[in-house]
Amino acid sequence: MVAGRASFEIQTFHDGHWITSDYRETELTARAQAKTLFSMPDAEGVRVVKNWTRSDGVVTENVLYTAMRDPVAPKVTIVPIDESPYCRETREYYRWESRATMNRLFRKYVDQVFLTPTELIHHYKSLKRIQEVETLFPAAVDRIATIQSRHTGEESRSRRDEIFRALAQMTDRARRAEDYPRLPKLSGNNFERLCERMEGAVPPGEADYFSLVVLSRELVKHRNWLGKLDRLTEFARPDQRREALTLLDGVFADIFGVASALQDVLGYQQNLAEAICAMIDLCEGRFQADRSDARDQVSAIAPLIADGRFAETRHALLDRAIRQLGGVQPLSRNDPSREEEAFLRVARRLLGADHLIGAGAAAEALTQRAISFQEAGGRSGLRRAIGIVVKLLGDPVPAVSYLVELAGSSLGRDLSQDIGGALQTVLGVGQLDDLVAPSMRVVDKLSRVTGIYERVLLATGLPAEGREGVLAHIDGLLSAYVRREGVIEKLDHPDAGLRDRAIRLIEFCAAGYLPAGSRAVEIARGRVVDLLRQPNFEQRFVDGLSDPDRRETVLRSFHALLARAGFG
Image (cartoon, rainbow, N blue to C red; front, side):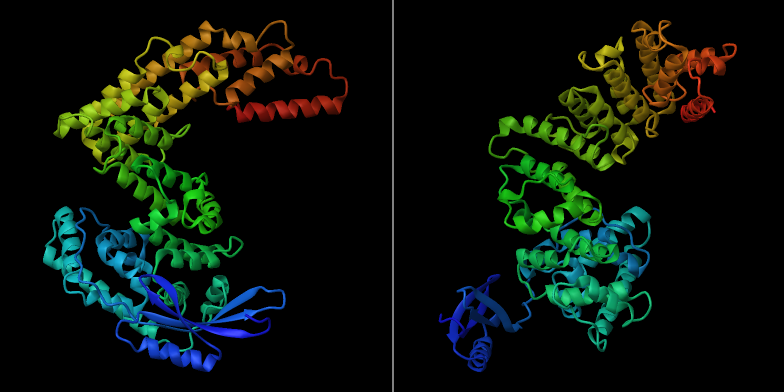
């Protein structure tokens, strides 16, 4: 193309992609040709792109005209689900839990029309279209009503009527938004500016809803997940107001809740175990996007997920990872002999240094997956599955984290005796060194076992008597270790000065190396009390400091340290 001249490219939309169909030398003739192509029955969409060659040879592109045909509603059915959040008010249907349920229930439909739940409930035409699919919408409402009435005891017909009334209100709201006059428009990539302008353009309390209406109008133009993801990423500037980011977060969460979209994001993964670990990595900002089909977009939003500003997206990723872990699809499809190895890789990735990522839901998923490693079913199968998980983990710290979280889960409610027994087996050792690596420093050993103590202390799902017995045993291990290793004697060595001895002891008590209120920590605290009760303690504490101001400063700091350690 000659520099300084423009050409006009006519593109048609087929199977989620734009394809160049023709060229014209003027915008007028290009638009006319585009409209001719769009009039054909099989045309999904057309657009005119102006190509301009600058003097330096760089070609710039600008979309001048776009026309898209509404997708034909496919004849699809719902995907059976077994759980659904109970919404008592219409506004609750807009929450992530409800939208995630829509994603699962309408998975086949969503995969064909490339619409997120946010678009479905904020874009009037899309909402009406899904309601017109005879094999889909009534069946979905009936399924949800049946699930919920089973748990509440109410009549399913009554619950179905309530859901239909709420959906009628949502539809009416979307219709009114469709006809609302002079709504602000998206200007470039500035979604935050749209949200600000919306505040003064719509009734109080409606700005977020109408902002998503305008955003949905933009997103429905993109008939593939990567296109939507790319457009959303352009809006997701990290320096904008949290309110704007929160709205965008919800749509990203919707996209990541679609299996095919998430596959584009993660890229090729060798097996399900690898994919689950990749989802967890993405939650924590550790994901390597080199194999992703959306590497630039993922790199842009990963920090927002990791630092908590995209909380719903993180929740959606974890929810997907945990559901896959608790499912029946093999973790190592290509090599069944490595299924346990793949399981252990996922388990270790979920079990961080001091907690189980995903909490009780993850503990349930680990247990459900372990059932497949043996033949027993029912309660016996669950009991054996718990033992399998504990055995595979090996290390008592992650094993305790798993058992404690399982005890607090809905699955663990009926297994509290079995979980308590497993916990006693893990911790029923003769000495503290059996729970830690011999090479660890003394304070690290104490901190590690104290961490176990504190996790058991918070495990309210365990029988009280059994929990108290385990706590007493751990306390005994700590106390015996402190005495055997002479931990307090080394801190309170008589060759050291009184000031150094007192500060070391109190800093030890304040550091949390031993559980608060335990017999073990009372050994250290008792030595501190003995020091404080010595005659003329404060005078002896500042011996050697001749400057009165310095003596006062040292004493003031010491009293602050005492207060921090609980000696106030």
